[in-house]
Image (tube, rainbow, N blue to C red):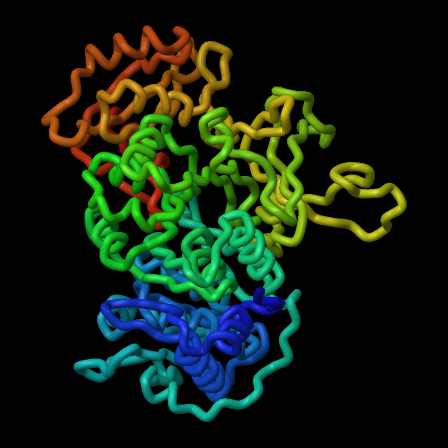
Length: 534
């Protein structure tokens, strides 16, 4: 088993054991572990030749491709920090990230550089731009910014870089920013390697696995497909898809054994017919980024009856927190499970004391996966990363040095057997008629009616209720509309009166996603309010 302690060692240690084994596939081509390691070593040397200092940032603004992966591991190998920028971001958002964390080197494509040119003068820290291919026309860059060709840089002779230890920073992952400016979650080598080892252990990944990287690599769960696979010497297939059917085609073509995705994608996949061969090799499918609707889970299990379902919960600030073993799915399909290996999860009241059985409280995560706070944002860091009081969560009273934990902002409850259940995000919970209602609970029931394709619930101010529940829905696959009267009747039969939505609005699907592939509740609710006021 891989005994790595640094991020880039996940590749180098596997390359030592099995240099000829397939590591990474993209566009019909595959790199072996030996080839991938060679490219990482040369790219790290190239970054050092550009003057990259220890801890300095390398921005990567690309879709999923070989260069994206190589640069993500080469920057930490050189002693720097990689900053993946979601390819769906606009130029202004990319420029904000570059300024916020002082990106020194930016790797991108000629096409994406064209989009960024107007923003580069506002990014004074950027000193070098590396292109994946030569530009058709020489770009006009701000004075002092060097332009480099990736292929030529890969010819740089390999040499040692800065000293690196596992508590050094290796990555800054920016959140989608749907509720304001994106925040940069700072992660160390120890955070990322511990996460890879933990996830690979409970998913029982082996060198025989083929994992499909369908999620953005700027998303912690997306990058996890690389780290878990490289930890065990498995193969990763990079996929930039336009339609959900493209995911199924890739799973069939590449004989994928493990798929991790978010609920909106699974909802779409569950509504399609799956090639029969998929279930012959798909060992598991794993959910993250929100609760999987029961109807969707049931449909997926029918599509892939031989595949094990793993229901997971995580947050970028601590990578991954809980999972539900497949053996428990039939007994408690609404649970997010228990703590992953090498993590401790508590459910605490506002005063820091532990909650009783079935008492709602805040999920708090401690352990090796807890990140290093938000880059350059002391206020938000203090809100989410807090000291654990002595005597709680394994903290002996004699300990003198403090320990930080992640206070998730998510409300959960723990049953008598220790299994956790997600109730809702604190900033999304709706307060109506004196009751606190989770939007995901409303959405779960709406999906169960089978009258909607996708849906999103949110609270809007109401003079007497406090908040009224508003829902936006799309038509089911193959349907031209939604019978809203019948849907309202179903809600009255399935929900307590205070939970029944006050209004429904039909929209054409699919509903908009944020850059991480989740349905953008904030965007939809804001747009709905603007329509009411116009």
